Length: 236
Image (tube, rainbow, N blue to C red; front, side, top):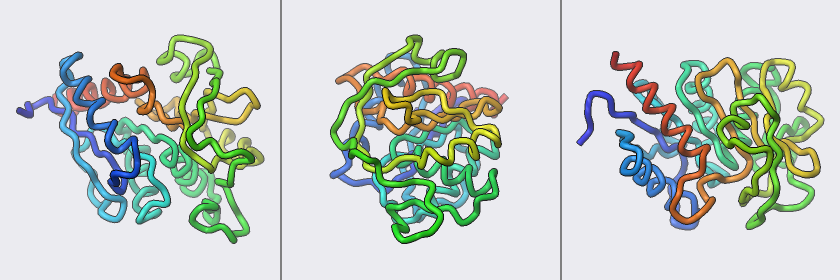
């Protein structure tokens, strides 16, 4: 039963049995509730129903693009970023977190996602040279970043299911406005973005929710813990 300190987590995405992470994420949060006594209450919010997110302690923008509403996905990221609410974006969540930051922080208001607007002149998110659907790959973490602290190692092997990523020619634009890229693949392409001025803001191109069979990935655990801490602070 929810308590006064229940952490309310919004899973933002268009729930589908065809998206593996949509089945795994609730089970992982249930496991954390049981094993670490985290009081979590999970709500699904379709992208075309994103309206008032006040009262949520964590926002997870899930894979499953193209979303029913790009605007809804962007609005969820912006709300978490501007209100200091723990945010995790995975796969398409990473892509749309970068879109939100570019448009609303960097002033690149016309930038687009190639999956949604393939003929646009200003593409921030572009097709990957090689699709990562169903692939695993090594990820290198930048020392001193939140991601490195959470993982506790210099490298890890992560699972992907995506075909789009950041146009690396736009890295400097995002960095100049405060976004940090804290992990890269073996080719030097960015795989995690974070905001050091935010209580918890991580976006990963890989899908930590697909790691392992039963034990939640450290990033998933850290997000749930951040949401629980936010709930405690909010109530107190």
